[in-house]
Length: 149
Image (cartoon, rainbow, N blue to C red; front, top):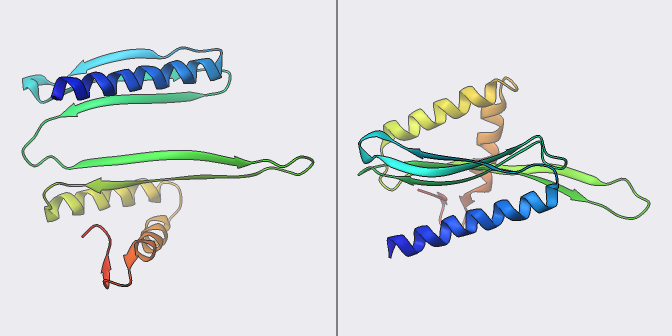
Protein backbone atom coordinates (compact mmCIF):
# COMPACT_ATOMS: atom_id res chain seq x y z
CA UNK A 1 0.00 0.00 0.00
CA UNK A 2 2.81 2.41 0.85
CA UNK A 3 4.31 2.00 -2.63
CA UNK A 4 0.94 2.73 -4.27
CA UNK A 5 0.53 5.94 -2.26
CA UNK A 6 4.13 6.94 -2.98
CA UNK A 7 3.66 6.34 -6.72
CA UNK A 8 0.43 8.35 -6.71
CA UNK A 9 1.97 11.31 -4.85
CA UNK A 10 5.10 11.35 -7.03
CA UNK A 11 2.87 11.21 -10.11
CA UNK A 12 0.80 14.08 -8.75
CA UNK A 13 3.99 16.06 -8.10
CA UNK A 14 5.16 15.43 -11.68
CA UNK A 15 1.78 16.44 -13.10
CA UNK A 16 1.67 19.67 -11.07
CA UNK A 17 5.19 20.52 -12.26
CA UNK A 18 4.31 19.86 -15.91
CA UNK A 19 1.23 22.07 -15.64
CA UNK A 20 3.17 24.89 -13.98
CA UNK A 21 5.89 24.65 -16.65
CA UNK A 22 3.22 24.88 -19.37
CA UNK A 23 1.67 27.97 -17.77
CA UNK A 24 5.09 29.58 -17.30
CA UNK A 25 6.39 28.78 -20.77
CA UNK A 26 9.93 29.81 -19.91
CA UNK A 27 11.47 27.64 -17.22
CA UNK A 28 11.64 24.02 -16.15
CA UNK A 29 11.74 22.41 -12.74
CA UNK A 30 15.08 21.12 -11.50
CA UNK A 31 14.87 17.88 -9.51
CA UNK A 32 16.79 17.23 -6.32
CA UNK A 33 16.37 13.73 -4.92
CA UNK A 34 17.61 13.61 -1.35
CA UNK A 35 18.12 11.04 1.38
CA UNK A 36 18.79 11.61 5.08
CA UNK A 37 21.45 9.52 6.81
CA UNK A 38 20.50 6.39 8.75
CA UNK A 39 17.29 5.94 6.73
CA UNK A 40 15.65 8.89 8.55
CA UNK A 41 13.79 10.18 5.49
CA UNK A 42 13.97 10.97 1.81
CA UNK A 43 12.21 12.93 -0.84
CA UNK A 44 12.16 14.68 -4.16
CA UNK A 45 12.37 18.46 -4.26
CA UNK A 46 11.50 20.24 -7.51
CA UNK A 47 12.28 23.92 -7.98
CA UNK A 48 11.55 26.28 -10.86
CA UNK A 49 13.38 29.62 -10.96
CA UNK A 50 13.57 32.55 -13.33
CA UNK A 51 10.40 31.83 -15.23
CA UNK A 52 8.24 34.20 -17.26
CA UNK A 53 5.29 33.91 -14.88
CA UNK A 54 6.83 32.43 -11.75
CA UNK A 55 9.87 34.01 -10.17
CA UNK A 56 10.22 30.85 -8.11
CA UNK A 57 8.04 27.79 -7.48
CA UNK A 58 8.57 24.62 -5.48
CA UNK A 59 6.69 21.33 -5.38
CA UNK A 60 8.05 18.94 -2.78
CA UNK A 61 7.54 15.34 -1.73
CA UNK A 62 8.97 14.13 1.58
CA UNK A 63 8.93 10.97 3.66
CA UNK A 64 9.96 11.56 7.26
CA UNK A 65 10.57 8.99 9.94
CA UNK A 66 10.47 9.26 13.69
CA UNK A 67 8.45 7.85 16.54
CA UNK A 68 7.22 11.23 17.72
CA UNK A 69 7.96 13.38 14.67
CA UNK A 70 6.09 16.70 14.68
CA UNK A 71 5.48 18.21 11.26
CA UNK A 72 4.97 21.77 10.21
CA UNK A 73 3.11 22.94 7.14
CA UNK A 74 3.21 26.28 5.35
CA UNK A 75 1.66 27.74 2.24
CA UNK A 76 1.45 31.12 0.57
CA UNK A 77 -1.18 32.07 -1.97
CA UNK A 78 -1.67 35.12 -4.19
CA UNK A 79 -5.24 36.07 -5.05
CA UNK A 80 -6.36 38.51 -7.73
CA UNK A 81 -9.91 39.42 -8.73
CA UNK A 82 -10.27 41.35 -11.96
CA UNK A 83 -13.25 43.14 -13.45
CA UNK A 84 -13.29 44.78 -16.84
CA UNK A 85 -12.41 48.51 -16.69
CA UNK A 86 -11.71 48.35 -12.95
CA UNK A 87 -8.50 48.11 -10.99
CA UNK A 88 -7.84 44.56 -9.81
CA UNK A 89 -8.24 43.63 -6.17
CA UNK A 90 -5.41 41.48 -4.86
CA UNK A 91 -4.03 40.07 -1.65
CA UNK A 92 -1.81 37.38 -0.24
CA UNK A 93 -3.11 34.59 1.96
CA UNK A 94 -1.75 31.48 3.54
CA UNK A 95 -0.60 30.22 6.84
CA UNK A 96 1.42 27.67 8.70
CA UNK A 97 0.96 25.36 11.61
CA UNK A 98 2.48 22.73 13.82
CA UNK A 99 0.82 19.37 13.27
CA UNK A 100 2.09 17.12 15.98
CA UNK A 101 0.90 13.57 16.35
CA UNK A 102 1.95 13.51 19.97
CA UNK A 103 1.80 16.78 21.87
CA UNK A 104 5.03 17.76 23.60
CA UNK A 105 5.19 21.14 25.28
CA UNK A 106 8.82 21.68 24.24
CA UNK A 107 7.89 21.23 20.54
CA UNK A 108 5.16 23.85 20.86
CA UNK A 109 7.44 26.27 22.69
CA UNK A 110 10.20 25.83 20.09
CA UNK A 111 7.74 26.25 17.20
CA UNK A 112 6.24 29.42 18.64
CA UNK A 113 9.69 30.85 19.42
CA UNK A 114 10.84 30.23 15.84
CA UNK A 115 7.60 31.73 14.56
CA UNK A 116 8.03 34.82 16.72
CA UNK A 117 11.61 35.30 15.52
CA UNK A 118 10.53 34.97 11.88
CA UNK A 119 7.58 37.38 12.27
CA UNK A 120 9.58 39.98 14.17
CA UNK A 121 12.08 40.31 11.29
CA UNK A 122 9.25 41.94 9.30
CA UNK A 123 7.54 44.02 11.98
CA UNK A 124 8.08 44.33 15.71
CA UNK A 125 4.87 43.13 17.35
CA UNK A 126 3.80 41.10 14.30
CA UNK A 127 3.85 37.79 16.18
CA UNK A 128 1.50 39.00 18.93
CA UNK A 129 -0.80 40.63 16.37
CA UNK A 130 -1.10 37.55 14.15
CA UNK A 131 -1.20 35.04 17.00
CA UNK A 132 -4.10 36.99 18.52
CA UNK A 133 -5.92 36.92 15.17
CA UNK A 134 -5.35 33.16 14.88
CA UNK A 135 -6.48 32.48 18.43
CA UNK A 136 -9.69 34.42 17.77
CA UNK A 137 -10.29 32.84 14.36
CA UNK A 138 -9.73 29.28 15.57
CA UNK A 139 -11.75 29.60 18.76
CA UNK A 140 -14.73 27.21 18.84
CA UNK A 141 -17.34 29.19 20.71
CA UNK A 142 -19.83 26.32 20.99
CA UNK A 143 -17.15 24.17 22.69
CA UNK A 144 -15.44 26.99 24.58
CA UNK A 145 -12.04 25.79 23.32
CA UNK A 146 -9.32 26.51 20.82
CA UNK A 147 -9.39 24.41 17.65
CA UNK A 148 -6.46 22.02 17.47
CA UNK A 149 -6.20 21.20 21.16
